[in-house]
Image (cartoon, rainbow, N blue to C red):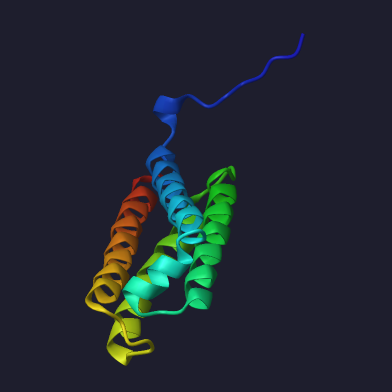
Length: 136
């Protein structure tokens, strides 16, 4: 007979980080999957181009797949730090994107871009808290 042991969930200290990573991946996947068929409309109402919207949709999908893979690893502390830092950088990039005037963004485009920045900052905070909860 073969015995399989699984860690006691109550003893796990990385469950909140895994939850935060999977929530980020799920939301990013949904945004990416929705962005592909809506790329033309999004480009029209935001002031960007179709190519940009397709690229961002593909980026969100690829990011989601990567984060799902990282969240399934035995140790997620290092991955959590990397993803949290990446989310902070994305927040800064979204602000710079708006201020630099890369595209002639509409009001909707500015609000949507900054909203994604707020979203990534919230995810970074959740992931940071998840990393802090992990006991050494």
